[in-house]
Length: 297
Image 1: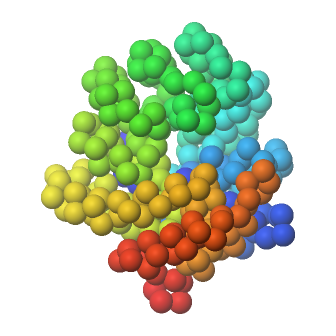
Image 2: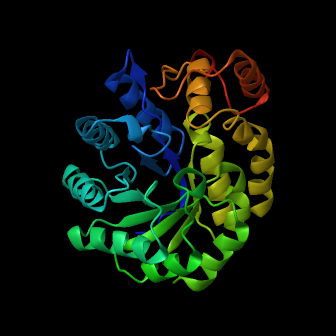
């Protein structure tokens, strides 16, 4: 299976501290109706770090149930504990996930060899396809291209979400891995640049509130229409940047609340967006031709 196009790093809606299952199902349908190529629950944007094990499995299960096979589901199962990550990944397969998104171990700061052995141990525990996730701004370690290349030789490691912010790093990974190993951007504003050097798409934050342009941009570039892809990229650029007015997912959840998609509630230790940034975000949403309140769609 090729992992190409726009995959949404899905937010998890909360109401009074609990997962809002009705809103979650609505978000899944909103994504599919607007062309999103795949759903990624329980990643950073989904606040998996503050979910209980039961909650995480429940969210993954609800998403799979609501998707009903219409698009792939890549379940976030990564932790900084190899045994726990293996357990979560095996359970995601049992629930029916198509693949697992597994972040590099955070806090522990493993060496390159430790990173390799972490992922290898997970592939020995389950044959579910694995998408690596490199996000040094969150984990305090970078997964070097040489490690990615080495891991790509394991049959069930099929792609990477590359969020180092380095086009050079993405270029090296594309250049030194096999053609069937897919590189997906982990930074919305770098999606088109990464695709220009051989990336296949994005696992997107901004797609939570603007799924259609991200799907259309990636599809345009993959079909050879670079001019259209560039036009869409420039039209959503300010919106992409606005998603990081505050720490993710504070801004995107605030945007979802402003647009009436779901509650803007986040879990501690995250807190609500301050009024100054909230005003800036509202102005960007109003100026973007792709974002409209639910009732105005």
